Length: 161
Length: 161
Image (tube, rainbow over all chains, first blue to last red; front, top):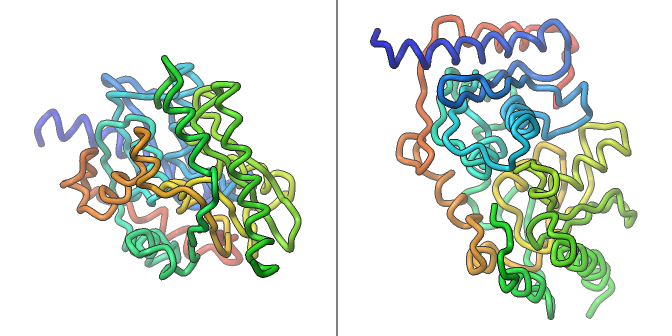
């Protein structure tokens, strides 16, 4: 195994180790994540959906939120996300919004499906038109709805994210 | 306009109203959301990415987290999400995880793109194989990585989410 692969495997093994937490604590599902930048761990996370009463408290989201808190930043450009299992669409999109550069994972969305999680289904749902989804999304056109967006876009020096 | 359409439009107008907050406060982008169940507002949210240093602090995610906190629940089954703009994949998947039943929105992902947000691109990216994405996701198979998931699935009476 070359040095690069060993480097990634070290952090990925840590993410898998974190996925064991829920077995003892019942805090959430068996998922762990580690965020790394320049070889330094920025934050670790493990699923806490049940303990936190927060359906967004997936390992990856918590690691991103914690790293941003620690860095006082809403972007983590150049960071690498290691996840014990392929991120669900929520976590994957969160990684994009955070400026994560690359993702490594061990288990797959199909392995998550095998133990009852809907990650694979979510990927299929998101590719459908809104009205065809299990959770239908319908547009209602409203007069004036776009105005706040236009006004925002016209703010000089607005902060982009 | 029938009563049903008027009902939805009332909450959607509120979501649009919330999308104006960032124009004054600079807390985040011009996006608002309202979560409703049985005609009752469970929570409201507006984008706070910048103020909170949290790339996941989208209007919809904050409304879901706040409603769950208020209900001491990690599911909001039967709730309806009203969003000033079509939810991004992170927010859409969060709605699935939360058990949201239906979504209504006013502005579209293309209108978000027109003012510089990457929602539409995110939908395209999520549909690609991991290695082909702008943020590449690569699987590294690790011995023993699936074991925590198997052990979790074997826990009698484990809490599903």
